[in-house]
Length: 197
Image (cartoon, rainbow, N blue to C red; front, side, top):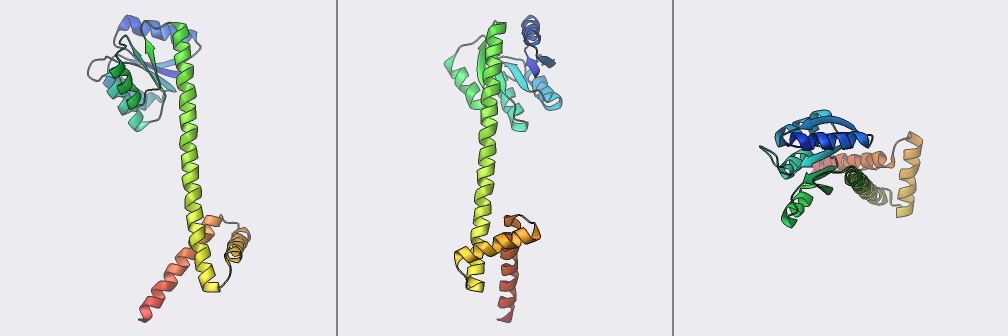
C-alpha cells in the first residue's frame, strides 16, 4: 500500500515512516505542512494518508477536507490531542480513524486496516448508489417509452414492454437506448403535430 505521511515533527515523521515500512507498506512521500500534504496527495495518488492534526499553514482537518474534495482516499488522523471536539471535527471532515501519538507499529497496523476496510465499504456503498440511480433512471425511461407505445399503438403495457425488448435484442442495443429513441421519436412527432396548428 502506498502511504503519504504528513507530520511536522521530523523525529515523529521518521518513526511513523519506520513503522509504515516495517508493516510492508511503501512511503510515497512525506510532508511537514498541510499545504504540501494536499499537493502531494494530488500528485502522488497515495492509497492512504496519515495526517498530523497540528501542522503549519493548514491543520490536518482542513488538509483532509481539501484532499477529499479532489480525490477519495482513506485518511488516518495522527495526533497527541484527545479533545472530543477535534475528533468530531475530524470525522465530519471525512477522516476514517484516529491514531494517538506516539505511534507504535501495532496501533498503526490496526488504524490502517480499519481505514482500508471502512474506505472499501464506503466505496462499495457509493457504487451501489450509482448503480441504483442508474437502474431507476433506466426504469423511468422505459416506463415513459412503454406509455408512448401503449398510447400510439394501442397495446397493453406487457405488449409494449415486449416490443421494446424485441427491438433492443434485434438491434443489439441496451433497452435504455431503445426506450430513449422511442421518447425522442415521440418528441419529434409532437413537434410536427404542433406545426399543423
